Image (cartoon, rainbow, N blue to C red; front, side, top):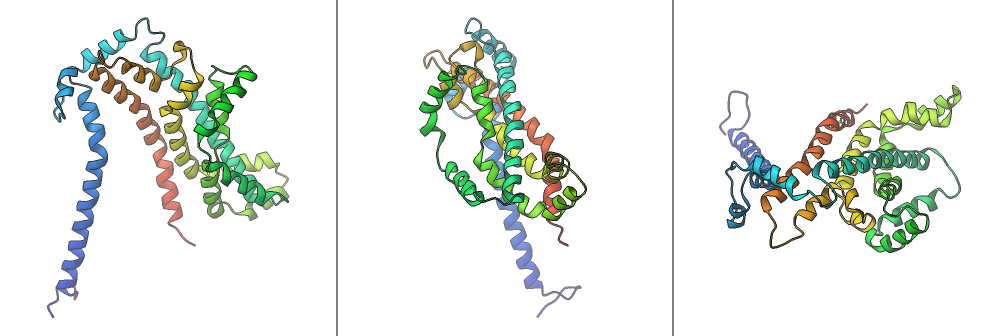
Amino acid sequence: MAKNSTGVDESYSSQIRAKKIFRNVICILLCVISILPFYIMIVNATLPSSRIQQGLAFIPGGEFIENFKGMLRETKGSGTTFWSAMLHSVIIAVPATVLQVYCATLTAYGISVYNFKLKNVAWSFIMAIMMIPAQVSIVGFMAFMKTIGLYGSYLTLIIPAAAAPTTVYFMKQYMEGALSVEIIEAARIDGSGEFSTFNRIALPLMKPAMATQGIFAFIASWNNLYTPTMMIADTKKYTLPMFVQGLRSDAIRVNYGYVYLGLSLTVLPLLVVYFALSKYIIAGVALGGVKE
């Protein structure tokens, strides 16, 4: 049986190389499939509407500036502008993300660290809420917001973010392996208060999980179209997804160059948030790979 200079069977080495090549090809293919829709969206943002209607294009055009100016012109007199809609989305997405991640981490902390009689019942209730879609409760939620006088306010899109059962579930699962109860008990013995222990000890250990859920929460809030459409009737308060949706409201006069440009600009803040928080995710993966 032929062997190479390191004493390894050549047929076995060739099998390993073939597997590596196959895995690399699959990974490259998946990357191309993932990136291609974003590339086409950006290319369409640089093309006139007539060219976009003709079919797929892979070469950028020279209409980006004209599409941008036209998109701004289209919004004049409609109640809001592109920059105002982006500001409205920031006003909603940032506090909603912070509130969701913090409250979910605090809830997971309480479920994991404390022992109380209704602990299993509380956890079962959180799991049950995960199975209820938002569409089922939207009518009752609208009626409740009208009753307390918050209908049409951005608070209707921010405050409910504090109750995020999916985020609580993720945080609890991560906390079971990343947070030691002995550390919490040692802090209590040293005289640390409960909130001080949570903010100064638990939160730093949860940074990778919080960064991950922060990305998901920001994307969900930023791209949310269903709930703002139901809760915000004033066109002056439209968010960015509602603004982009308005560009397609007239099927006869719709300019697809404007629409794709609006979609491309909508994605940019999401990329900024991802790259800003990705270092914490990488640090968490590296930390999780070290076993004592």
